[in-house]
Length: 184
Image 1 (cartoon, one colour):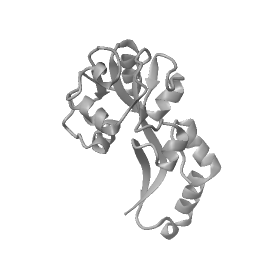
Image 2 (tube, rainbow, N blue to C red):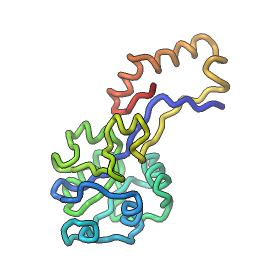
Image 3 (tube, helix red, strand yellow):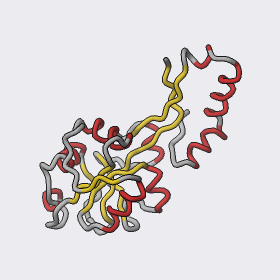
């Protein structure tokens, strides 16, 4: 079986909009999610407890997030929520909250670093932008695959035509419209 990457989704780490913290290192983020760091004052923020928000068990975004940080099944969540919209709403409404959402949620909500009710954080100094996701600079990403038995060039003509469309400008524009980052 061959995994063919057709799009990429960045996972943005977000805090409530009033939080003055604008970025974290991966180790700091892992320490927050495992309960080693529990107050924003330890990270240059206000003396306020950190409220750890995440997706429910079984979520692909949660699996990717925890695996990328090397903290699978070690997290101390205060809230485990279904759906990205629910996570965004909880972060926005909860002082001291931190959570992660698919990159497209930032674009949908109009929330970018320092704007709106939710702020996306830089991770290791890199913001979750489409360009940083596409180039692989931003470290929290999940790829979307279409799997074939053998290379695309070994497939029937109709399936090859499908992949031609998926990788075309029109196909990649559809991926972008769905909030994903296209691949070259």
